[in-house]
Every structure is written in C-alpha cells, then in structure tokens.
Image: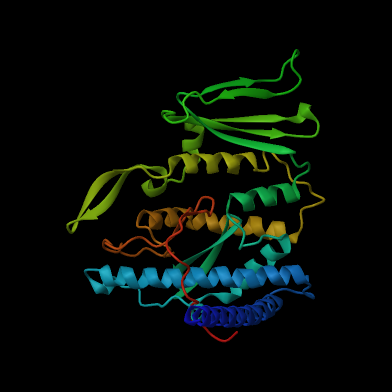
Length: 355
C-alpha cells in the first residue's frame, strides 16, 4: 500500500512539473512571437504546429542552458587563477532573446523539430563584447537531410551512406555507352576488423535510375572539409589532457568514423548534388543561408572550445581554463550539431524570467 501511495505521489509531482513546464513554454512562445514581430515588417502568421515546435524549442534550450551553467561553475571551480573565471551566469536572463526569436521563428516555419533526434541543436556561447549569451542553432544530419529534401528540385527515393575501410571491397560502376545507370559494388570482408578508414561514398537513387549519382570521397577529400581546429576528441589523433597538474600529449581514439560519415552526409545533401528549386526557396531558407555565414565565423572557435569539452564558446579571445578532473558535460559536434556525449540525466529547468 505504501509503495502504491509513493508511486501515485511521484506521478502527481511529475504531472505537476510537466504542466508547469508546458505553461512556461507557452509564455516563452508568446514572448518569441512578440520579439519577432518587433523586428520584422508586416503581420506574422504561424500555424498551431509551428507554435508547438517553438514550445519544444524552449524545452530543449532550457536544458542546454542548465547544462552550460553547470559547466561554467565546474570550470570556475577548477581554475587555478580565478581571475579567469566566467562570472556571467547562464540562464534566460542573460540570453540574447532578440536574435534567438528571429532564428526560432524561421526554423519553426521551415518545420524543424528540435525534440527529434539529430534535427536541430542549440549551442550557447558567450559574447564577451556584449556580456550576453548568444545561442547558435545548428542542424544535425537529420536536419541537413530534411532541409535538402524540402527545397530540392527532385527528392531521391533512397540515399545510401557508407564509410569504406582498408579491408572492404569497393568498386564504382560509372556511366558509359554500355551502362546507363551509375552504381557500385561494395562488400565488407571482415566486419570485426575492418582496418583503417580510406574514404567513403554516398549513393543517391531517383525514380529515374539514369539520374542516380555515386559520390565518392577519399580521405584526402574528407580531410579538406575537416575544420582547421578540429578537435581530437571528435576526429581522433593527438590531443592534450591534464594529468597530475600538467598538460600532456596523448593519442585519442575519438569518433573518426562518425565524423567521416557526417562529412559525407553533408556533401551528399548539399546543393551541389541536390540542387534547390527556386520555386520552393522562401524567405526562411534565405534567412538560414545568411545565418550560416555568421555560424562559419564562429565554427573555428567552436572547435577550439570542443578541445576542452566546452559547451559554451567565447566569441572574443580569453585565456584557456585550466584542466577539469570531473567528467565532461555533454558535447556537441559543431560540424553537424549532433550530440557526441549525451552525458547523464536531463538537468532541471534553468533559472529565468517569467516570460
């Protein structure tokens, strides 16, 4: 009986928390739409579904802010010299809501759902010039595919992405006078010991097979697209760790296979291989492309921050924090936006204003 009563009490508490969160997300949605309306000309129209997407954005961003605040406090605690501490708390009161509102409404009108796996990720970073946190929204590989297919002249019926290792057998079959369909042969010869990565490929299939396209990328091609300050935590190779109060060079395994796969995905769904339809391109798409230019400017700094397992990025140079001994907070691949290390249980809601 006691166990049943405890279960009922816990469920009631969860239901109350969920109701309060939904109420706050609705207030946040109204605030976002108000901020957006104050920055654009003309009447703003969003559907009920788009409002729901914005409410979902609040839930995910709120969690990201709480995680970033925990990381800020941890890094401050581990600083040997506290003059390098970051004293700006991460919460809704210190977020650049004006710019965020513009981004959120455009992404909602495009239909990207932040609550879905690898669709869209919020990355808070500190703008030291303004002493505020900007939030960059990065598409995950599912977001990249969604946008490409939404605006493509023709949507492929199937897409195959493969990383090729040294023990695999890969044979491209190119178009020719005796072969009207581009294709390939691929075989994994040793699934448990595939050797070194030598490249990869994507295969786009269309309703008309003669339009099928094989995209081959060698490791040289992939390395050219690798960010200049790519983190060894992600790509593997030589990295730095702190041991016994000293920074030492170590060989990190990283997630090279995933990084290679994401690079191939980004290439396959680019406008180069899936041209955008001018009739489908709208203001939301144009806005996103303009924002990508700004994101590119901070991408290098995002990679630098990733080397320290950071979740926040300073947009002006600052002395690097000294080593942390605690487990790293969740990190985000800034190339595609995918969470590499999801961390532990979801944090509690971030402190902030009543929207």
